[in-house]
Length: 178
Image (cartoon, rainbow, N blue to C red):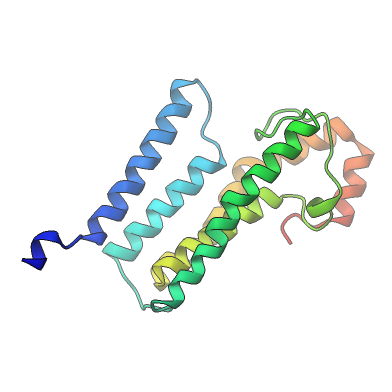
């Protein structure tokens, strides 16, 4: 009787994540927009789930310690409001590749030039921790690489063109990641 009501997490989790990715990407494309980092982030979480459930490698972290992965996941959603309100307060674009009219250099931006991408990467570390397997962790380093080549290089060029020496000085003082 218990088998009837048991949940096949190895099927449910990837299917739900795939659905989330499809909905988000479809919404972006219907609006005529490009695919931005949040959609790539969920694509990576989907890939983590596929790797974890379909090609499992050594289990690095066991339950209940895997629940520590909830901290960066919750932090990402908590920080989302902080970043959005900061960009709204300064009336500047939060979307990548759009011209900004304000250069953030204080607060978290005095430690990293890309705190939103750092938080997204930590989110992936959190989801990998929730899965606990080596296979889920293997994909994490590819996210910052994708973000760098797909967005950061162009964002930095726009910021340098917009803010000139002010941005170059900021860039020389503060690291890209951490």
